Image (tube, rainbow, N blue to C red):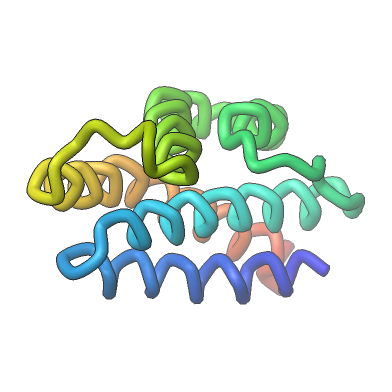
Length: 131
């Protein structure tokens, strides 16, 4: 099951990067989905149980921090990304221009890129044959 989360997370990550300059709202949506599914893959892999059914990145990160304390430093990035994810689901709540959204999508990608790499590294460690 964790492999499915990982597979979909990678697709969402690629979509976020592809759409970053052309469709920032979609990029932010896929960015949130990528981080959510990566966290769920890590939780599932480590605990061998289904992760919580939530889109709340902060909540998922708190679960993941129990597995690896180094993830705690990404809490602010998860809170910020989660806030934009929720706001963009309700177009009337978006108060940013297209140019500002483009800038914000790029900023969010850069903020979560180290988290994505760290989770990927942890998954590799947990699944390596030497373990």
